[in-house]
Image (cartoon, rainbow, N blue to C red; front, side, top):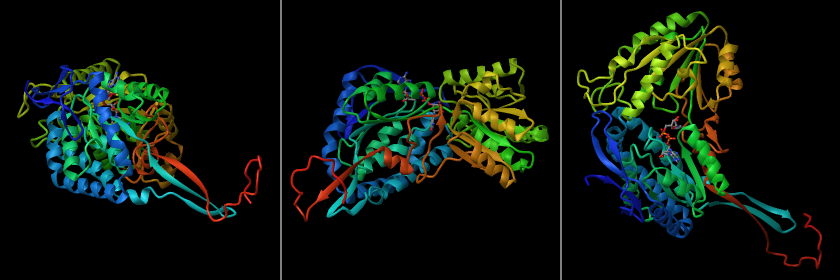
Length: 500
Ligand code: NAD
């Protein structure tokens, strides 16, 4: 069989014993470009065993050694990020500049993790009691599992694995079966950077592979990113198996445009955040909430920009690529049908961009950017996470209505407000029940040294990704109480020790 995308264990590709595979396509041409291996339980155990075997030595590797491997990985990734971007575009479809942007955001987490010696400093208290000292250390957990979604095949795993590895854990990543090749490229790069075999492993597969990671006692923690129903399942299953879990779920991100906003800035932002990566971003803006009398003017400005977007092959000179699969493209299109049937006004209709035209391959999974006006909260185009290039405009009269809309939505990943009123912006950042907030910034993805994560149905667990919360997630604290200089213990005393 040609181009089977296999697993990676013990520093080399691993075919596994299962003959099951799933097709991987190039969304811009519809061509099947490979078959990804789907692990059996035995294959999954073999990959997990590789991570378990590598753990004792990697846990004891000095911080100097771990940091030097991270630096080497950073240098290699920075030099060769173009290769990774091409792999992403060929299986995901996003335009090359966007794929490069994703790699760059992942690279920032590698850079953060290069500072691991500083991040792992514990505390020390001298003379907590007479001649008794107390100190704390942060130790790694063991082998950890990372399960990632299709929409960021490089960045999302990189939210987790640089910090996990730097902190002394070993890793098994289970990429999306829709775009699995980036993971193998990253595995080879780790080997080149000098990471010992078995510290970074790749398990290709579907639910069978995921379920083994969630329940195998050798796996100590799970970092998951994907849709909310699967995030909930992952959280419930892995915590029941005694693991530490962070499960990031889906999103419905609102942008509030107040009447005093710079409408040109806001319209640019709505187009960029609504249609970038064909709306297949967990931080995409899918609901634009126009407040007060500006709605007509705002919709006109968004529309005039939307019609200039060139939808096409991500390797060519396009603004927006195809959707990831034909099934997904068709599903997104039916949401537009449903919105129209429910009374939304189709201002720009992406369904006219479903066939090949210009330099679009007729077999690609195309859908143009779509702008819907007069959307109301009961419509499925608003209630569901569509994950496509569909921007819904909802019209409200006041700031309070806009805030109530966002706070009553089950998701709470990202949000933004556009205004020139500092007081209104400050009120919004204080009152909105969402994990990541932008003020005149439509996609407020936190830097690597802050933490990324939503609230409500957008995150199950209590740790966000990377930053201080990432270090916290991938380590556990040990507190040690020591008496050296005065071995006399005052004789037998069965009472609880008191500090004197
Ligand atoms: P998905 O939930 O379908 O898949 C995510 C992962 O779970 C994949 O590795 C997949 O193989 C696995 N999986 C799928 N079904 C499973 C099942 N029944 N049992 C066990 N494992 C299963 O998500 P997707 O379509 O790949 O990605 C898009 C979703 O991810 C969107 O909902 C998006 O909002 C979300 N996402 C969220 C964030 C965030 O930070 N909150 C970031 C990126 C993507």
